[in-house]
Length: 578
Image 1 (tube, rainbow, N blue to C red):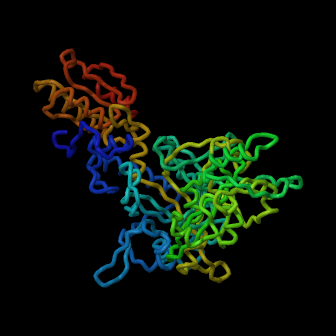
Image 2 (image 1 turned 180 degrees about the horizontal axis):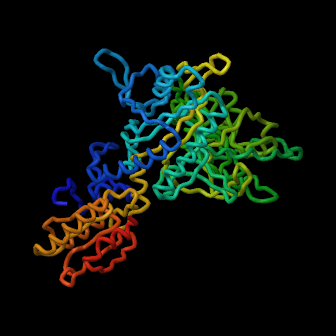
């Protein structure tokens, strides 16, 4: 410790939002350089490398071969796949001194595809799986939580190349099994969920989410085994309703009722129902947005959904990607005089030529209380399919506990998670765009089908820290700890120092990674540092040495026991299972 490049902090960093961020900084594992950009110090780098070793071992076990691409890349391949545009502001773009467009790689599908194109010409060279562990760059709008969501991060990305869909399915399943082994070895609670492919494209897509209350991703699961990221959930359409006995739609004055709450109150006061009171779920709320396409064009989109539902911004953004969602401004309303703000109805949207998509609960035969396209007026008994047409559905409402799973496996419950891995069946999207073809057994050119598979390596450090830390500091599992054992010398005198140094040397000779706290600091400081650093086993050589004993402490349980110094080596080896 007297030589280790580390400095622990007694106070939390001002920008720390989650436990992993707080303790990794305080324990001297990482240091902030800029928002979303961190340096790795020796202790943090040791943990990062241990994560890499686990990932590398499991990737090699399925026959994957490691390569390494540069982080600085030419723009042309990304322009060919249109991701130069689709990535939007997330992409770090730059121009070199010759005027060529360049980027810092957010992910490397294009480069892997071109490498395979350069090296492979026959189906006999497939299947092939390549991977790298590399730094990636994404200009996050709101980097947060330390290394959980940064602008620079370490990622393992691998890519499979197969001659047909059957081969892709086999590669996908091999990766899926490898990921399960990786995350089991890392030791945190995780769930595999259906996911949205987003800018990656492709068909089958699953995420591995670390279950955490501090996670940015919301997922749902049912008692019957359904699990999905909220972005990928598609609630089934409600059953159509027989509306033959519903009276004709009627327009009513509803002054000062631009909100759902005021509308429900007005409805119950002005035209009460015979069967029950009006509630928010009886209303059809029409929310309008602007969609900005990657080429800069802007078009409005209206979503119709029951009044007791809200649009989930995350689900909407995923559904319309690569377009970006923007607010519909006062200036926009001026361009569409058919739209009465606060009183928008289906008729006004049709007259304005606005694309109008409906929640799965809005199906033919359902009757609604909704805007009449005139300020201060609403329509009752407006029946979908009878009084206005359904041109399409879009499920982007905020999901709630108790919503039914799309596969009929029961009610959904919501939880939070941190995305740790994502696997995709890309198909031929990138191979077609970049001309990756090989000769098949009949001598005909076939487009190669691909899969893409990522693991957040640096994020794993934070996730494990998040899952294992306590109110005293980090508490690493032995598989990731920077050192197996910390030997702490407390007290004055050469005898204590010599005994601690000899024990540390003996442990080191036995294959144990050891950190010796030989500093001239108080026992209290040393004990606090041993806790904050999170080494699984701590051996204290101090006052008990007068009786020939040392103390062995287990960081996770807090259990401490005295053992004779002569037995310390075998006792520690037994504890750490060497």
